[in-house]
Length: 382
Image (cartoon, rainbow, N blue to C red; front, side, top):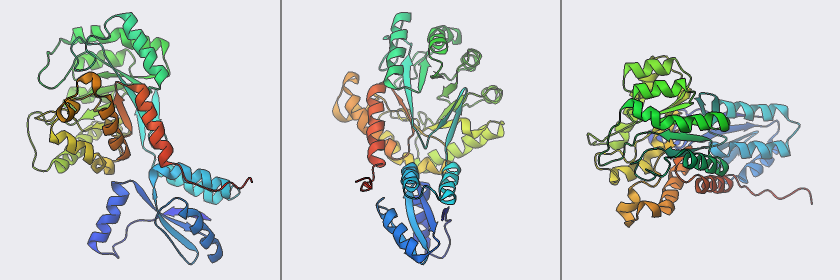
């Protein structure tokens, strides 16, 4: 037996074709055909697939079904338990998994986002960041916070030396920003080699110093907008977080505008000789012309409209001002609403979660993944 992936044909109406394409591209569903040797086997396979609560039909010796990409690993596990001697069947599933694998190549690390999301911890060493400004100024404070995030499950720790918070911020000179971030970079590099190091900066000189110091990721809120930045990235292997910002303008159709932005931005990055497997997308929530308003809620909802680009999408909403706008919550009291919003975005395809609260986010991910991959099969050991 074997499982193959079907392509969309034009033998249905335009609307039906559009609906199916939407399921595949936006909702990350797989259109699969399970080819069996006998009709009797197909009937048994159909009953097996029904355990996954998906649309399924069998026609002769074929079983056709729509299957969520996020649950492909669970399907592989149960297939192996049932047909562990069918190497062709298992190999066909492995081939499908490999074809749809979304990789993020970031310096020393390669993250397989379909298999495991990335918990991306925030460490601001600034005096004025909107949430944690001033908290981590001494080496002791920085070391303690890094250790706390690592133990809580962070895969990445991002060091920020200048805030870009809404409502205005004070720009610092590149040398001051470098001076602020280097102690944390050195601690991470020497004491936590298993953790990817990121730096949040839009300045070329800071990027150069960070890359020279051995960081794995550069997060640029200006989307690597100069030839000098792109040339620097092309000479390195660091991961890149490229962000859309609309602080200076509004849109008629927000979703279409963001899609066009990232299509053009990714095209520019690729034209510079940079492997797009290094790139993660950030919608720029909190960077609207009117920050923390309804444009931000729309971006929380339409995150899955970017799945067709086949790049990881970052969920970067931790403790932001929507909690104040909707519920009049102080920044210290916004954890619960942050986790709720992060869950909504995670379920829509946001696989990199950039957060202040690493422990709680790790619990969120484990809970949602456990639910999404729990299918009931009666034990055969009794």
